[in-house]
Length: 132
Image (cartoon, rainbow, N blue to C red):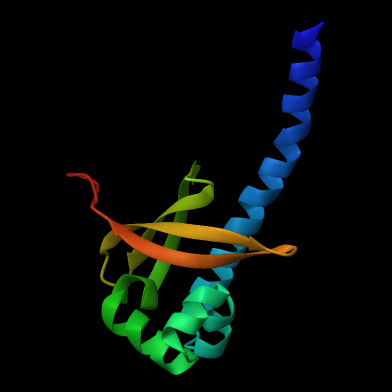
């Protein structure tokens, strides 16, 4: 009798996970579009409160992204790879390509804030040989 209940509970959890996956990708997409449009205030709005406190202003945040994450700043293509949980936090692996064809992988650390997701950190990941 335990197996059917476990199966029902695991199946019931699937739509929530799919919704979260979609919601997380939507937030990252919206921030990427904001960078592409050079709408720094909008891009900054997707950052978590702790990230916003760390940078203090959208202008400083935009300057950091432009100079430290040029592939994100000049993105032309975004692909979503694995979504995983790491120490209780959701981490979305993202492949970003810029206008010059450079490909960089990033881990986007996400937090749920009320009924929406926010970006809490972004870390570049080494691209495996032959992928770029």
